Length: 246
Image (cartoon, rainbow, N blue to C red):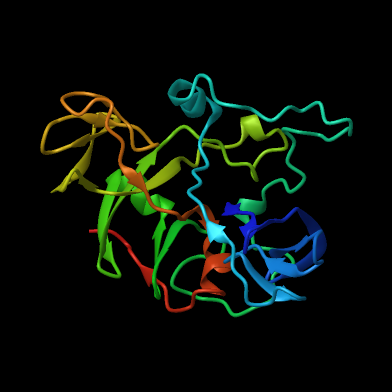
């Protein structure tokens, strides 16, 4: 997810119908420049070299979202077009080989393995969901910055079953700065929830403390690509560090 203001101009984007390394190429309607979805950089046209500002995005279940943001805005399905919302046209995509992909392959992980991926400066990190599911929380220092990566089950894959709601549970992640009011917190998975070892407060996937002495506090989120497929990340970030567990 990106901020769509560039040099003070708000851009409107559409899909070009083109792919590069199986990654979406967008275009803006103001200049018709082409933009790589990965990295948010203009690669063709008047705005070549310009980059969109990446914003924090977490792909979570509807249940988790509405519990945390009961007054959150929801896009309407009533768009005037007969779109099959809730249906997956690529049944089983995340269980096979990525079609339409032509590029170098990094054998450190399976091509279609789901990872959470972060860039800090020139450094990049990928953590497989299977490792996150086992550990619950991963602490890592990337480019001199401490990260706390949370994981929780309960989010369906959008690329598994025909009906997205029936997709297998692949979980969801959140990436945060563990420093709160000058103090570094350490987190662990405990009985299905995430707690900090300093106060025993419980935290959700959005970095909100939901109970305990720190209830109401909020961790600073760090922009990342959650639920990213390894092949698509590695082809753009070949020097990525890969965390494979303790």
